Length: 375
Image (cartoon, rainbow, N blue to C red):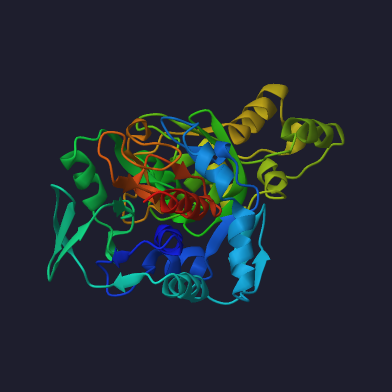
């Protein structure tokens, strides 16, 4: 996106891509259909040490701008949920769109270029494993540490440090969380079971699907919460969002209901989860024989299940990297390093991390567009 905009301004632009093909992360996103933006993108959908930094770029290039580009290229798309837009066909269409726009802007794309060194004298010099390049402006659009199997490297962070820029500590974000040993023994056999839940961490809450895995918890609600979770702290999980279980149990008891409590709970939760929950938390009793205290304990535990994860599944399973180049080092208008004229940082390498649902792509388009107006 940055190269396209710079090329439109008549700049001579070369994109150095260390992979053998461009857009590998685009190609695997959204189950191969690329969740390329979110119509409801707002600054509050992003995590950063400076929550105001992203506002300028997002205001100048919004979801509708990228949608217009998609439509101009005749790419069919659909809204899946909550503003999330996906290609009807393949994520390859988005890569092809960007390649076509680069070609039209006269941008040169070089693949298989592993950068070895970067230095600056009168101009920036970038040395890869085959050639040396000189330029007035250098843009680091190198992504984060997530998904190393498709080529993630720390290059952007090392270049920032080389030029004296501060970093906000990096960590895996939008990542599955792992159980501690005791919880693994209790719930590891539920792998594959999913349920709608509200998951809370770091003062934020997300109501979406939660998935049990062999090692812990995943699914959209947990991935969202993982970006705000801090090691050693607990998640609070409401397994019955919107259900007043205590009142329902009391009504059933008053009616003389002889069914088991776990049978009632299984009306909202998968049976395997309901059965295991009562195996772990105590014997299921007949509703008609339960006291107020027992009802309160069962309802309370299901509405606020506290789990302290052992950690995340790491960068291998994380979708993005939180942290990165400190936004205090950059201009929010141009994305240029304040102390290093001509050096720009855009996208995931910056300390701006989107929530799940197309927000990280929109930040890539917006920050690239912003820098492309000034390089």
